[in-house]
Amino acid sequence: MNRLLVWYGELSTSRKLTARGLALMALPLIWISLLLIAPLAAMLAWSVATRGPAGDIVWALTFDNFRRLAGFDSFGWTKAYLSILGNTVLMSAVTTVIAVALSYPLAFFIALRPPKRRYLWLALVMIPFCTNLVIRTYAWMMLLSNQMPLARLAQALGLIEPSAALYPSTLALYLGMVSNSLPFAILPLYTNVEKLDWALLEAGRDLYAGPVRVFLHAILPQTLPGLVTAVILTFIPAMGAFVIPDLLGGGRQWMLGNLIQHQFGVSRDFPFGAAVSLVLTAITLVGLLVLRRAGDERVLP
Amino acid sequence: MTRRLHPGFSAAAIATLVLLYLPLAAVAALSLNAARFGVAWKGFSPRWYTQLASNGIVLSAAANTLILAVVSTAVSTVLGTLLALGLERFPWPRWLRKAVDAVVYVPVVTPDIVFAVGMLLAFEAVRAVLGGLRLGMATMIVAHVTFQVSFVALTVSSRLATIGRTVEEAARDLYAGAWYSMRRVTFPLLAPGVVAGAMLAFTLSLDDFVISFFTSGPSSVTLPLYIYGSLRRGITPEIHALSTIVFLVTVLLVLALQLATRAPRED
Image (cartoon, each protein chain N blue to C red):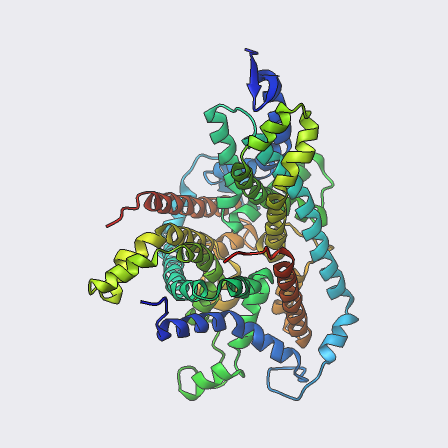
């Protein structure tokens, strides 16, 4: 079918347009498909294979890798992998809640600066994020190390052993995770807060609504799209974290990212690594879909 | 009611900003400490900075970081812009548009670590088939382009949607050729979107660690990889100085961008 058509002021044929459009998109699409989608598909196949004695892959349709992640191995049931899985979800959720809770005041604070100054404040939020993940994490290690004032204070108060550092610890892990995701929570919230209809807040106040009700009925509905984006941009990268738990959490605070890295690195168990990767990706995608639906179904009270 | 923030909220906002900067400030302070080991203050000394200047590994790592960011940004900006133009400017059937959209979103939604493993597998496969492929700068650039291209395409697509097609259509009605209207009409309108996409790609490349970690070779150490490696070997004061320099350069770049792109505002 090759019909003549006028396409935005140009007399052309559908075949010609298709050819030109495909020519533009071909290289980038092939690039992504071959380099990323194909290996992801290979991982899908590997996840049901098994590891041979020399670290090679033995093709056998088996769900052993997933059963192993669920804790069933030849010695019975252990909770080791499941607790990593649970920890990952819990830590990501807590990180998201804290990051969003800290972002609301900051978004309001910036939105209430004089217009010319707002971009400077936003830049201030963004600057640490243009350095590098490793540098930010390492900076936390230094700040929390044993002879720095914070650790000294904790030692004096008897919270930690004398001459101990504040990392690796759960606290250090959360500090690193939360500060790492803050800008991704602040920016989307800020774009909503800046456009806020303040008359609704004033009306709420006039009708004797307390701060909680003003937030729930006047602020939350207006900032919901930004909130959903903030949660997506915080929760999803947190689920895949690997450097922060590695450096700040120590060996006892493994997340799925560390487990995956270990399988493809030290233990060279590619099938199990692929299975864990798939589970991580699946959780991420389900989270994304649920959150996007929550964003679409916003109802004004 | 005036638009004021409760003082408690302002305090919380400032505290949050402090949370972002305190660690970096600590490193900057340590970088000026004369002590070779530990963090106890042994007096002011700029010598870690001067030592850094003669550290060949660090200098080549800095060069590698920039080469990686610049080359991958250039390639991904071109590819991403082509992808956006191809997707937005042609009468595609709905299913094809959805399929392409899905492909574009794969690098965005795949967790970093899974993405990195995927890239590693792709390179292993190429090596198995063609042989001779070594992990190094080339594989890192390819890996970075693969995630950058989607972010560029999404940024440029949204700009294409904003500028609409009326001006282009007018140009075509006035007998501008396809290439002429592209060059003189579409591209000037699109340029801010392309620049924004390139800036995003550049930032993503500089911030990346995980993907570089999986796809680099011994000859292509970048600054983040070097710093991560030295955390395993033992931290030296040079690392403090190096991190502080990276931070200060970033501050200068961001401020320069702010000044350069500040549009005149009415309000």
